[in-house]
Amino acid sequence: MTSAPSLVERKQRAARERIVRAAAELFAERGFDDVSVSDIAERAEVGRTTFFRHFGDKQEVVFAREEALFDALTAENLDPAPPGGRSARGAVQALQSLVLRLCAHVCEDPEEYRRHERLVEGHVELRGRSAVKAQLIARRLGVLLAENGWSEDTAALAGQIASACWATARASSDRPEDLVEGTRAAFEQVLGLGVDAP
Image (cartoon, rainbow, N blue to C red):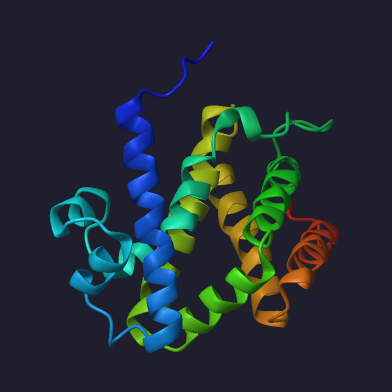
């Protein structure tokens, strides 16, 4: 049984959320390059020290919600091995519902999703950071599988495939309402290819 967060923890979470919200508002108003850490801290009503306690730089704030998703990638969220064992196909199937739930979570606020995508696409450094985050998620998915009995090679392959399914859906449509179905369609295509062939 987990205990309720302390007052200090609640205050820290509230400050972090104010920073994220302030940054999103400022980036939407002025663009990424015309917003400083000081601007974000002032809008969030926190000091620069508090900002840097939560984030290394303003790029990191852009991906704060994705970071929370990354933290949610735990073994408890992984589907059990399907019938047929721990093949590559089984690994991809085990990740499918987890990735679809993550997609649904990302799109809970369609307008926020659109703003985030526009911001990232409009800035080369943010596109690079987004690619790094996607690789971290793919690796984490692979680690989850390896921790649950798949071989490291199979787990790494399945993590990359699952991440590619998500990326394919994002590239196919900029409409947040299409992300889950697009990702599901990509998984079905992959699973139809017979991914456990050598």
